[in-house]
Image 1 (cartoon, rainbow, N blue to C red):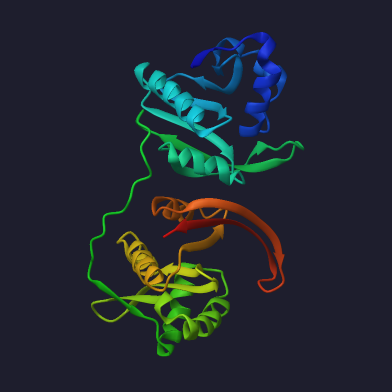
Image 2 (spheres, rainbow, N blue to C red):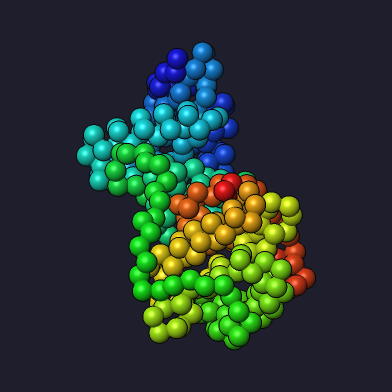
Length: 304
């Protein structure tokens, strides 16, 4: 049986572990000033989670962490209920921009991405790092929502070689600053072996407004190499419908799992994959000679 209560002075060293895993700039001396406002979750005499909030018109969560998901949900519900019962209209928190795991957890709790704060948080080495602001306007903790599939004047067909030039334009539009030739040349190669996994969306005028390209890199496993939607067509479920069609084709082909990666700073893409049933799998940091720049990507997967 779990119990949520106010922290005790002698528990601060254990609480610091939870706090620093959420905000690396939190120190024990700072925590000691807030001990009468820190709450902990205790189960069978053991601390399983802890949190600190400033309850005002806009509640701020300084940290909120737990050893398992169920405890985190219990702790978040307690904080959110208290925040909105005391008159708050909004709950906000800051987390390190490179903590993809915290972003996942907060998104699943119903928080929304608000913006990026440049060089606004200290890391464990005392250096300034970027932070992400996330907000919540209701006390409810929902399941990750699914999109409603409504065709909005476009249709999907397999990719063809004659689409090559248009895919270059699509890639330039969807990912400004990236090299479109790298994507497009690989698409030409993988589409020959996996035609049913390489799809494009066209509007009523025949204009390519989106594309999804995947290949079966291992038995029963497919990797989504590129999912791009024309900037002017975003928000019309083009990407969602392309992904749904890919999943249907992949299942018919006997594929059981899809994987995809995206940069850890591309939070709109991260939200897209979460809302469409993908789960965070691991983080990949590597130097890429091909792209001539380092990569910091989050890898997601989905069983289909």
